[in-house]
Image (cartoon, rainbow, N blue to C red; front, side, top):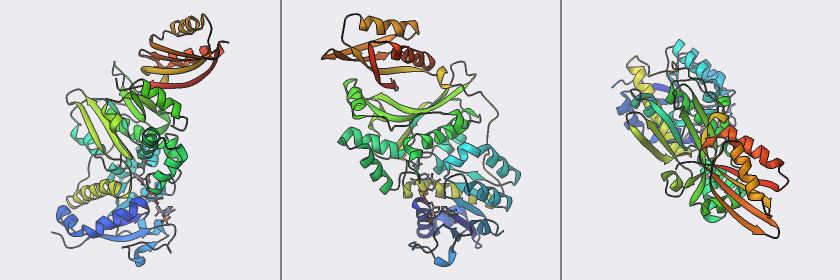
Length: 429
Ligand code: NDP
Ligand code: HSE
């Protein structure tokens, strides 16, 4: 074993960074044996240097992250600050100064992954980010390496722990949205700005990363159709239950049937209670990968939180250190397929639409006509009347999203339709 240690700079020492530092210290001997050299924490960059950080030598703490990554003797930079800047500049500077990089930063990778991969390749260094998607669950490496010989057609799952925690609480305990969000934040699951979680930006960033790797195509955050979960109500959960479903925020990346394009989307959806995703509780994540030869694979585990995320970071750290010692690098970006990313209107799925309508003769026929005119076939209709008004729940067969949007627009114009209470896609059947 080499006795000279590999030096690691830790950028950020919050929920994830503090656990990375803890495991590096407590598992130091095992990590050294697995890598073939000891790893030394050479510096820790933070914003508030005076904060007491258990297990961290105060002499290592600095607010000058730039100077730390420019030192020249750093072998690996672990970026767990989050956000776009200064993380992007720090990662680029680290690569320029000869360090490989491990990051958990999905927002940055979804936005600038191509440029960061190019910088890593230019400088002959690694850029690893297993922790950026689905916390502890090994997903990036299986997609990039284990399935490299197969053809992935679909990646579908729950990739945000905070929103799954909130939806699960709302469904199982009747908790209010804000109460559940506050609890998820206190447990360290939420992003610095939880809007990123609840409005679906975090899941969309993960979908972009997964789609890019799965389909060997550059997919950016802006390519992902995104709807958050802030408008999911207790009434939606009641409707879902009546259909034998629950509601989850799903990320779905699909190759078109003709293989010529891909789509990526994030939105709340009803899924049958019998589907494995329905039983994913709390901050757990689960992702299905469907490929030509392997068939259907399911990845499941803790999707957020300090220690689970640190597990993925440490796995990358070991891989990157091994590569450094053997003078090699791992696989970089693979975007050779360069498939176009189609808009949401091209997606085909089923819908659950809840309408408030006038309870009088001919209304049902009028509503059904609008669906037919837009080529959307109805599967079931349920009507409940009360005081001259009625609630009408329509579940469709599979239809284009664009056709459904046209249907809803036309329904809103009918005098007899008082309002569209909710529209939810139905997946997993
Ligand atoms: P935290 O907010 O808990 O920690 C951020 C850390 O970065 C803090 O230590 C903070 O310093 C430091 N920091 C902020 N700005 C600067 C700066 N300009 N220079 C130096 N240090 C700075 O975030 P998390 O640990 O939760 O998340 C980190 C990353 O990991 C993010 O990219 C996140 O998306 C990702 N991630 C998080 C998961 C989770 O469950 N929390 C799961 C998977 C990925 P100080 O301590 O002084 O405030
Ligand atoms: N905020 C993210 C989540 C952290 O809740 O899933 C893990 O990426």
